Amino acid sequence: MNGLFVTGTDTEVGKTFVSAALVKSLSASYWKPVQTGPDQDHDTPEIQRLTGITDQSIYPCSYSFPDPLSPHEAARRVGQAINLDNINLPAISKDEFLIVEGAGGALVPLNDQFMMTDLMVKVNLPVVIVARSGLGTINHTLLTIEALKGRGLTLAGVIMNGPENKGNREAIEEYGKVPVVAELPRCERVTAETIAELMPRLQRFSESLGRK
Image (cartoon, rainbow, N blue to C red; front, side, top):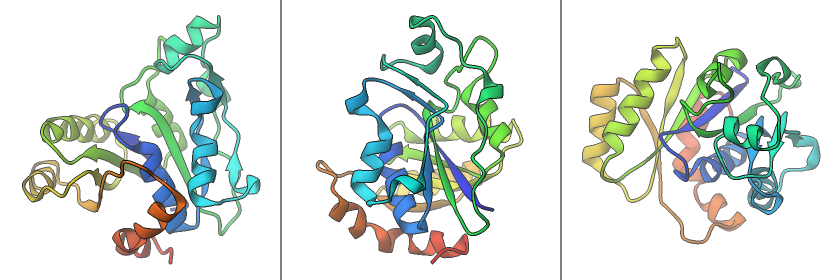
């Protein structure tokens, strides 16, 4: 295993926050294959701000569109279409670990034929699901788990984002048959120091992947 694909149960669920924490904890490189939204809102510079990784540890987007919309619609707005054949996993070194961050949720369309899950299948990395900790997360997370398992994807675990919720965590693990590998607090202001403070919460998961 030389990387993880980070997806979410929804948009604005904390994928970039969790991706930054994983990049830091796993001493990983970062790749956002499809980016939508204006330049100032791009996730790649945010990852660099929060983790301090160098340009050499960042791989360029395969597609980037200016409108903050689902990839298929953002591409259509500028007269383009996303071609899955043009999105290829970067050639990383033997000892390198890669965090790949998806756009939106697992079933976000890329074009009129393929969805984000098809990209996950193509890159063939274990998937981490980022989920909210509060009300509604059981349904959203179990639906996401079902969609990914139905496509034969390997699930590395769920990371819950927000106030700790023992009942929701246990329900996801029991009914989804997927471990919650970390619980991270939702932070109103996220800084490099904030990310550094989260490292003990991810230590066990990082060690399970052979990364210390």
